[in-house]
Length: 190
Image 1 (cartoon, rainbow, N blue to C red):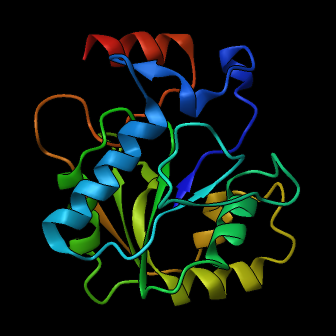
Image 2 (tube, rainbow, N blue to C red):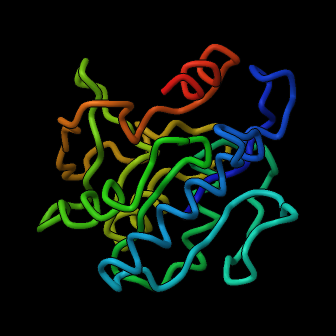
């Protein structure tokens, strides 16, 4: 599930998932990472994009809009979960220009008996929009949180058993997201 909603306010209202890094829209980079992980491990059953339809999305992608549009990541997760039939779902932001198939496969393989697995940054912060989750655990959490619009991801996953995964490789981490023009410049340099 790729979360591709939001207003891109910190980028002047630009459609952030469609902003190119290295000449390729960020959402295309994320979708390529997901598809690559599926080719490598044959575990990807379906790809869901939550947000508005965009030209250039592969026909195989299922698109659903959160309610209300722009309701935040938890509203997007709730909308996307209705389409998930798999036992495990990768939950990824659409603005991760350095995400690759190996990172997605690492997350999917790290769950074990946990409710989810997420990358943590060098400061120990969980990157909740770069993780993999047991679908049933997320659905239960979404049911407990009530109206999802405006709720935080931390509130959604509070109480879940989450495995923290460190990305020890050199280079830009797969969870690096682009929220500002400075982020985009840094992504281009990397």
